[in-house]
Amino acid sequence: MNRLMLFIPLAIFAVMAAFLGGGIGREDKDVLPSPLIDKPFPQFILQQVEAEKQLTQTDLQGKPMLVNVWATWCPTCKAEHQFLNTLAAQGVRIIGINYKDDDEEAKVWLRDYGNPYEFNISDPKGKLGLELGVYGAPETFFVDGDGIIRAKHVGDLNQRIWDKYKGVFDKMKTHVEGE
Amino acid sequence: MKIILALTLCILASASNAVVDGHKYPFDNNVDKERFEVLAEELRCPKCQNQNLADSNAPVASDLRDKVYELMIEGQSDDEIVGYLVDRYGDFVRYNPPVQKNTFFLWFAPGVMVFIAFIMIISLTRGKKKDVTLSEEEQKKLAKLQAARKQNDSNLQKDRTDSSVETSEKHDS
Image (cartoon, rainbow over all chains, first blue to last red; front, side, top):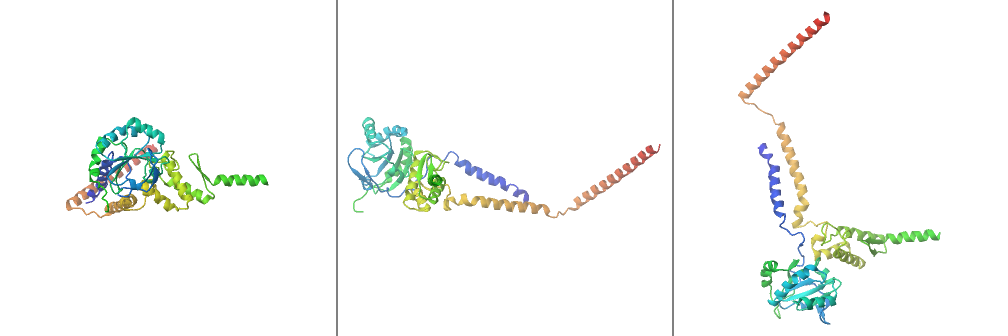
């Protein structure tokens, strides 16, 4: 009996090694879980980049959409831009938040690299970004037709990531009038 | 006198400016200044992990410091300010995580482990003190060994007395 007791530390070690070892490399430490999942998109009143128009959270309703946080100073945003163009061509609704950026530079960027966005929200001070818990562009929020955030991806979107989220996106509901 | 007054004012004024990463956050009293410094140290930068808001010079850390300052000036309490950031960035921004379902292991595992170690030490040391009963065969063996040892001891004794006699004899001659 006592002999067996001696093996308890080894057993505990084995269990912990398996548990901790399994965690190594699995979790991407750069990606933090967002507390905004299943919460309504935060309120805001901001200008549109392309036009003299005021936008609010009510503009983020109707058809399910991707809300993409981007900036011209962000190299990864450039890397994912072509993929966003591809998605837009497939009919995916994408709305941009131009994060801590200059409107004029953003317009030049959209002219040169193509514009996958239905419209762009101008967030020069990063205020909306702070409300959304943005800590590094690009970030993409999956927002359903009722304006509820259903998922968030930090980092660039590409085919591999899109395959992962496609199920979530297809399940998101379109807003029904009068509901 | 005037110089002393001016110097004192200078020192007081500098004391109520919290300076973080080259930015000045002016406060009209030292209590708030210290609150701000404690918050900046207890809140974690979401971008550059393992740095707090006071140490980090990442843009997002500076934004969050400004926000903490803004909320403090608005008169919000420490809990409200931490809550504001947790609502947006998650529990990750806290260096001092709350006790809840998913942090239970984190908070109580060390205590549980110390307890287990304690129980083990007790049970192992108590095991050693237990009386040992020998089988008949073992008792015979023991008796034999003891007898052999006795024999050995007396032989040694004899040798010793012999040699001492020898030395004393040598001494005499």
